[in-house]
Length: 271
Image (cartoon, rainbow, N blue to C red; front, side, top):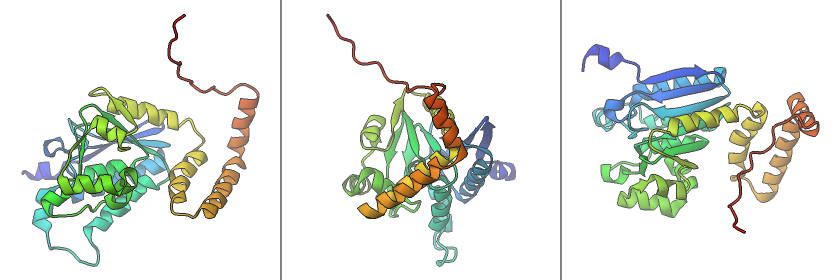
């Protein structure tokens, strides 16, 4: 590999209105994540938190991400300070997505494997096109998940489902992934990014403080007891409703100036 190729940016960033578009740009490696790509991704996520009201994660080319760059992992195996494992960099970086200042939507296509699935799980909404497939092949590689998957993916799938993927090497289709909670939307091939961007633009119409409560407060509820969860909910409800923007939005609704819900049409009936 030439020096120019080695130094080429591996993550793209575009601010489109209020939405930050962040793309992993290593199509030739199926967007596998090495140390440099992770660092660039974290930098882009931090920038999005400062500039945007929502973000979209996607992969250039045909794949979202095939996960950890195993070639680099082999070369660096056994190196570094054991007190500072590389997985902690993944944890910190993906926490910026999952528990940062803005919501993220992941646009999934092709491989969503290993660390790529861990990255997708850090997003708040996941859109999969029909080419997407999900897998956790770490057991076959002699390693273990290291990007927060044992927490985030396990909470999406449940232990039994995640253990099945890791123990057997099972690969899930887009339809199976949506059914098992790895994606909330399925779209035709090539439509994941436009759909994710449209959802992000819709999210930007919400009150930012409400979005923050949803992405940062709601996930913490599951770690609380019933009574503590209800108490925390009351604090979030009070905090979000007490600000000036909430008052204006409620007034707009009361005065019939606010957009109404987009209610889907019911099934057609015959006479």
